[in-house]
Each structure stands twice: as structure tokens, then as C-alpha cells.
Length: 144
Image 1 (cartoon, rainbow, N blue to C red):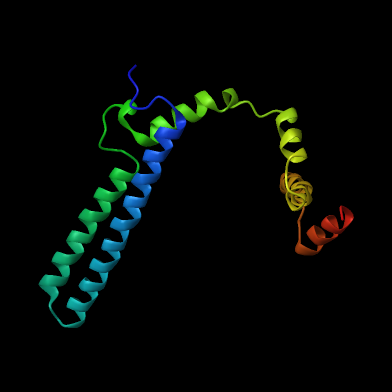
Image 2: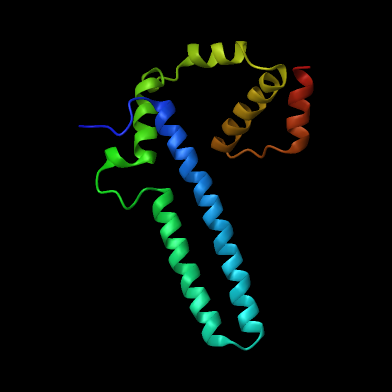
């Protein structure tokens, strides 16, 4: 299995570039939508329909390019390569209590204050309990 990249950093940098290009093309799509609206307002329906057809084509193309649908081989996809190398270089994908506690120990104080209420909110959702902003503020005060 030949890979396009040899590490996560290179794969993810390429994916970030692809995403930035997508945002640029998305801006072009927004501009074309405005042009179509202007044509429609001026009763130039044929031009408006043509411009909307361009919008659909550009959108489909940018979406395909963003998620690499035009590649037949997953090894040629920036998205799949980023996911692959993240799984290879990310501690074997292991998230255990030691990793969580280490992260909490090294976290900023406000992050620790938000962790417990977040876990309690998850627990409340499992037990069908309502977690309100008042409840969250009381929980935060408890840890201050």
C-alpha cells in the first residue's frame, strides 16, 4: 500500500491547503449567486438560470475536491491520508483514564472547571435529567 504522505503533518498541511482553496471557491459561488439574483431582478431569466447552473457545477466540484471523491484510491486522498496518519501517530488511538488525567493536570484552570460540569451534563442526558444554566453555574461555583 503506497501512501501519498509519510506522516500526519504533511498530510494535514495538504488537507488544510485544500480546505483554504475550498473557502476561496465558496466565495466565488457566493458571488455567482449574487449575479444570478441580479439577473433575475432584471428579468434576465435565461442568464439567471445559466448562472445558477454554474453555481451548482462549482458547488459540486468544490465539494468533491474538499472530500477527495474524485480519487479512486484512498492513498491518494488528503482526507484519508490525514486520518490514516493520525491513527498511526496518535498514540495508537488510545484514550484511557491516564491520558485524560494527564491532560487535566496540564490543562488551563478554566478547562478543568468546565470538565466536571460537562461530564455531569453528559451523565444527566443519559439519565434523562435536565441540566440548566443555573445548575451549571452552581457546579462551577463548587469548584472555585
